[in-house]
Length: 86
Image (cartoon, rainbow, N blue to C red; front, side):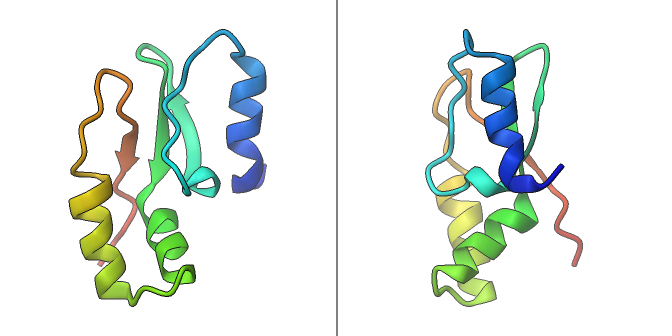
């Protein structure tokens, strides 16, 4: 399954759930955690999305870690899968 289809598939499978969706990172969804019903995002895909918007790699890393991953927005805060291997 392609990354761009995962979020749509999850929403179709669980229409009754109110998943918290991180704006601009739909293509970075790689799954969900069943017990909490929180979306799981790929860190490397989030960084790539930010780079595609014009950020350098270093700026994308800073922005992601400070503004995205570092934000707690309640019990449905997404899970950020650290698949970024440096």
